[in-house]
Image (cartoon, rainbow, N blue to C red; front, side, top):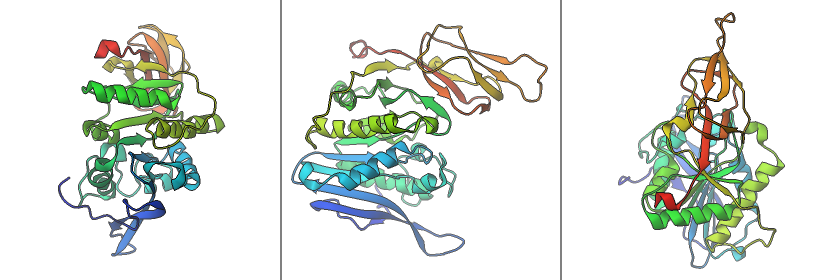
Length: 338
């Protein structure tokens, strides 16, 4: 991250007031040797105070973040805050425009690209700018995700367990302030390079989310997303509390064992035998996979490998061997992990 980013911007991150602008990412394409792709950015600043950096659209098929953050960017005025709010509503704009998890320009997963490089493909260039320019000035980092096309999730704020107890407690407090039904402690089971992981490693109060999926995209999920962001800005003393009714307390859960993340044992059509929120025991049938090539054969059983509650379930019936089909969580005791 020592090399300077090649991305430029027409906003001044230190200027008071409200600015709408873009990050200009240099790109050379078949249709234009000299070209730039624009990533919207909004800066709202008033006086001295903490800085919150809010991201949506890290994955392009997860649209709760872009909608909630574009609404917030339009309505939030400098007089309503003390400090600074930086909003990047569509971090992976090419993927948002395509409605795909990965960027259509380079096939990369933004949330596996951090910290990136200044001379990387477009996804890595954007990740490098975030890593080198935005995260260092942040006190609070929020990266809004959902299950997108592939996974149904119970609405949650999530984070990793970090070794710094003071940082972890602040993250828990911020997560509870959000007011989502669940606060979810998770493990990385599909590689490294996550934006929240890097922010956590930099000592930032970091929140991710899993706000449902495409089929759950509606008034309730968008309200949990939007209210939660404002609640966390109030927790950080950047905004005044909204004064609306307090949300129900979050239930703190964790999927802390590799076996909590059940991967498909075979390819085929995944038939779920459980719903989100169901309690299961180890050995409980949670689904079965029908093999397209062999309809005469019995489906391959998928069983729970641990005890707990179904937190996430695959949304796409057609499933490849090794893809996550079920995630199981249990109550997470903060004190027991101190």
